[in-house]
Length: 124
Image (cartoon, rainbow, N blue to C red; front, side, top):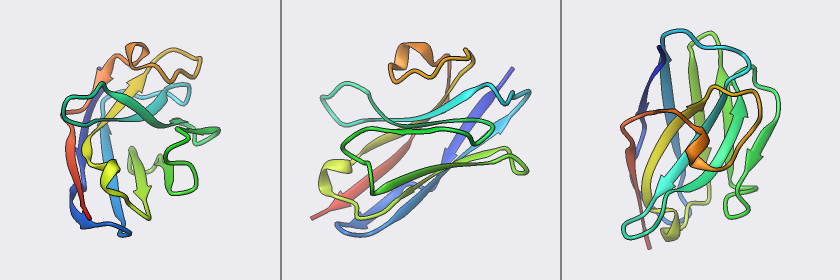
């Protein structure tokens, strides 16, 4: 069984950067797709970025493309999300998730393992 724990959230001014980490424990596979999602108050959970555990192929929401970078560190069993040029609209709870199917999905319903979330707040 896989479990996920996020870290790295916090408060930052607009234009600043944060780096989120997701530590995976348990058995993982290079075919897993690891995703980051976020949920702002009163809004639905939305896709942010995804990557295969092997590190191949990355996918981004249009709203973060060019500002966020997802990466895996297989030696540390960690998935990171580097967030640059942050905007107040990036404020949300950010979740790490694992999709154990082979196909890449952007819909949250395909991800069956979730972390507890980490708060990111961007002040204007």
